[in-house]
Image: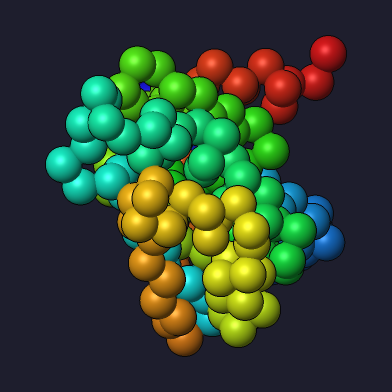
Length: 180
């Protein structure tokens, strides 16, 4: 269903983009698609891997040794507040409509169940984003040996954050695009 909608959108852009057919509108739609996460983006950024404590023992280890939605949301908020332009988790593009919840031992993101390791791709100023993550007191506590959450941060001059349409199911949100 997503591929059908993307094909219809592309056909509309093709028709409107022909010479003499309102290039201002096409440009405006392309800008809106970019802002809505409907196109992939690339550039400088980070690749993060977030994982539970190895050999977690529920009788001995604190519950914080497992990655929860609040852990993931904290990291995403830090990144957003520090200049991240686009992000994805396990290949799922995050948008203004994205929701992240713990569902038992997994995390639900845009109706997809995710399990660790959580691979986060971030487009933005790598040095600033890295510094913010490495200096955050709560992340320092979680990644300490006493808690054991694993977080790796790799700078990448050419990350690619995928389009929401690549994996997102936006049919549930299509009414938001309709004219009343």
